[in-house]
Image 1 (spheres, rainbow, N blue to C red):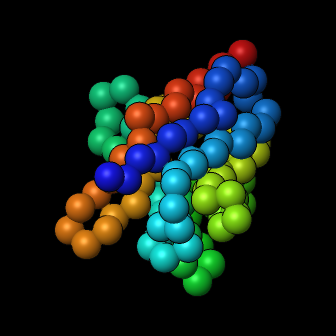
Image 2 (cartoon, rainbow, N blue to C red; image 1 turned 30 degrees about the horizontal axis):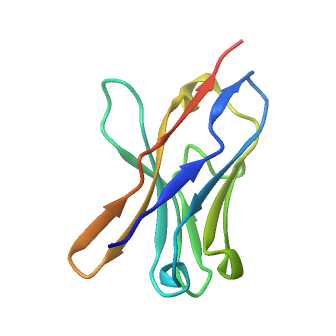
Amino acid sequence: QVQLVESGGGLVQPGGSLRLSCATSGRIFSIYPVGWYRQAPGKQRELVARITSGGRTNYADSVKGRFTISRDNAKNTVYLQMNSLKPEDTAVYYCNVQIGFTNYWGQGTQVTVSS
């Protein structure tokens, strides 16, 4: 059973920063691609950033240049550094890994950007 645990969300003012963490047990993050998704109220869940086992990354256009995804294999953790946050970044953020035909999701962490 794969468990993903997100943390690091909170309330931040526009222009501020947060770092989200997604932790798991075992070495799955060094083997499979990992994605960060987000879902705002009334909207569909969308891919924010993704990192492959080889370290290649891709980002949604809306976060390019502001967000950075990274991975620490020794800690079995994937991070999402979010800078220059905007109110439209407000959402629940989820960590995802797909193994075979099965998608695994964490419980999500709330990010609220507001003054």
